Amino acid sequence: MFLTKAIDLGDRLLPCFESDSGIPFSDINLFTRKAHAPKWSPDSSTSEVTTIQLEFRDLSSASGDPKYENAADKVSRHVHKLEKLDGLVPIFINANSGQFRSYATITLGARGDSYYEYLLKQWIQTGKAIDFLKNDYVESVYGIEKHLVRRTVPNGFLFVGELLTGGKDFKPKMDHLTCYLPGTLMLGAHNGLPSSHSKLAEELLTTCYQTYAQQPTFLAPEITYFNIQGENSNDMYVKTNDAHNLLRPEFIESLWYMYQFTGNTTYQDWGWQIFQGFENYTKVVNGYTSIGNVRNPQNVRPKDKMESFFLSETLKYLYLLFSDDPKLLDLDKYVINSEAHPLPIQNV
Image (cartoon, rainbow, N blue to C red; front, side):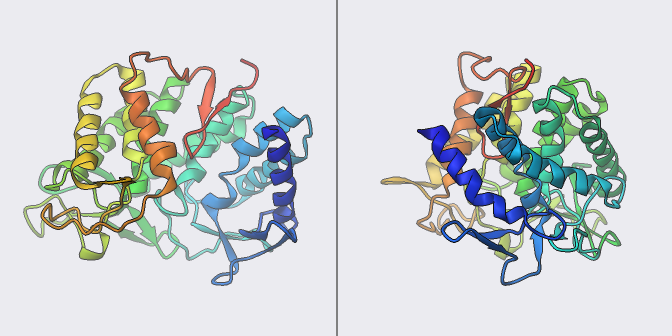
């Protein structure tokens, strides 16, 4: 039954790829099967069109029909050929022209994040059979280190910022979403990519931890800004509009990967501290809620909304982090998609 439903959904999504370039439109009516660009923009998000490949490839494997994998793989090969900044990509791409919006932001946060994640995970999923995926990923890590990595003043915390206007202006801002990156870097190092990636992962994870530890609720804000010019004595600060917490999973996800590959129980300790923050400030009668202000434990401003990823990702990664069986989910047999669902690695 579930395979039948998956095939039905895959068939309803395929019209998204019927653009002039093969880059999928972001919006589709699943009943009429008519796809189109969003009303607010002619473009699709880069992460949106490059974070379907694991799922469509697995659907082809399960169904025996290559059309799903072929449609998604065409997108990867098209994006591979586009000009980039040392592997870094703008966050918008036009489905009809197939070109990036040249002046768009470059970020490892919203609308860019999982493009990089899926380069690595596709390579792993295919049994390391498609070299351009690995090469594009390794180049992107080089680009991150060259263009986006900075250190704070006064304590030298490493963070990954953003480039505005197509790569011209640096902004010392990091979305919580970016905290997926340490886990991805460690996964790559585990699979034979440069060991320097694990050092970058460890330092960035420490910074992500500090975004939690420096708040009285021990919960991180959605966005953190960093001091790089010594304008004050604080390494990082939070703007009022960014002080909310949506119960996101990315930091917990990276903690699990780090613990898997190092065995260092410090990462379990950090995870327990975050879990206590959730318990103390987000737990309500029938679940957990996003909050509006991580800076004020007396009034966190509950939003009465629990995102689906809290169950499918945040709690799942916490469960795995504290599991008595460290091989409960074997990363040499499975690759985990962006929503924390394990998919089998091919040819294993």
